[in-house]
Length: 187
Image (cartoon, rainbow, N blue to C red):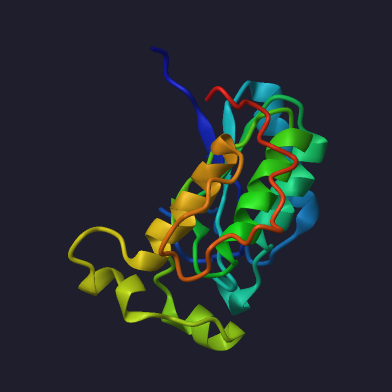
């Protein structure tokens, strides 16, 4: 087993915090982000990680994580692509599964999934997303509420060609299509 090197893409400005995963940039600027990513690929890094938040850092300015991962897939050739945590409550689980499969196919199988539940209530409130008590990190006894378990079941179902999750609040309907499947069906 060898050591793999990942880079946390600076997707928001965060001046004043020296020891954070994002540089202390005063402003969010695409050319600096793009150049950092291209330098990582040139230096031989293995992966890129992108935060999945609605607002963060200075003035709340942040690049939307999933859209940015798609852009990074198009401008790199070998770097693995991952959300730092893909918030299960920002997107419908079936839609999320479709997004993961699509990015995995168009990137040549380079997606790493880091799926998580959201914890910043202010983001949920500002964007009108439901923030459920079972999703509250401080009150979880079993390490995962029903929303997280349901969300994980749907992305996992990509490898099984959309096995229906019974008992889920938003079960995948018969009309949902599993195409494209993820790039590597054998894991």
